[in-house]
Length: 243
Image 1 (tube, rainbow, N blue to C red):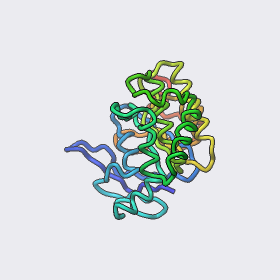
Image 2: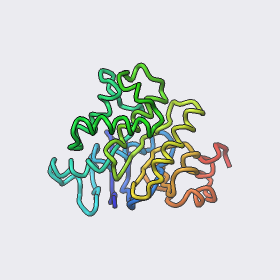
Image 3: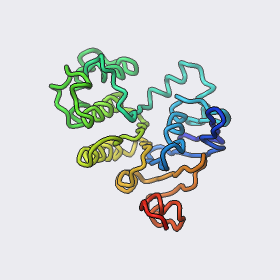
Image 4: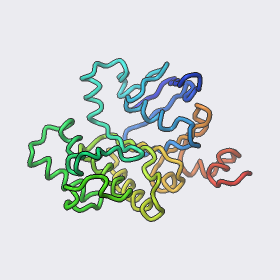
């Protein structure tokens, strides 16, 4: 379980997260939604320790990750993977080398098994192993997104975090990426956390939703409860129409 306890974070004088509390149970599929700039990605980066709160605690199985030694924190990070908004692939490396970055840092597989794992995860995201020698610039935006997902799942993480996984993609590619994420998150032993503003992800992939506004969680519940909410702001967000 991950428990964010009384988390506050500001940049300069702008409050991004304000005394926020959130529990994420093992096996949940969670969407974090809200307007642009409300702190969704900031919240996500607190979960995996990329950001440290100004106050409050991030507990991972009752351990405060921001008080752990570097080596202990790395042990926790071995259980987590993150798919960044724009892929975060290294242009100077081949596709295979980009995926191997995760495997080299977080696993003790031999060279042969690492190569086999690269083939395996590329197949899982519906990419041919023949692209291994290419570089990110040689691929379309949708293919780069899928390579980012392949790198994330290569280590068989217990937790996988997605930051706006379909941003900038056309509707058909978006649907393909959504289907891929849905297939991956269907493993009940894996916890999925997705930052998004797309209701299709909310309605088709996750079983829990939290909505941020002005640094606070204004909704927490199932997609069905979100869609049935009578709150005018939530309805406006869902439909894009003023009530």
